[in-house]
Length: 145
Image (cartoon, rainbow, N blue to C red; front, side, top):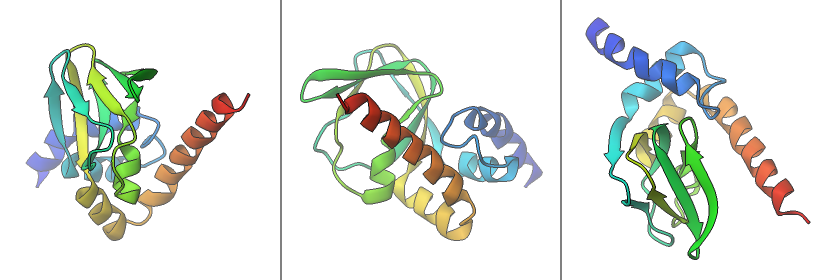
């Protein structure tokens, strides 16, 4: 058990620097780190496709991605940013393409792992919801003329 905790500690610290999870305490961040896994993508790799079913939330640990909606660039995201978060909440198809524009390392958390965490540790949900609402407001403000 101590061995497992030790292996998730550096990732838990990194997760704590990402706005989605920064409001959580160390123990909850370690639980999240233990529930997901690291994945890497080569430059040019399409990570998510608009309209396809979504399986996971991805947090960028290193690298850079572009978010494209109907082929148009809507955002460039780097270290500390996240994408795919809507699918772990509403189980709807992906709303955009995401392409790695540099070698990219992410932490992935599947929808079912996220749901299990929130069921088992409901105190995790409010901190995550605050960041999701903040992000939604930010998008709405930039979309309003």
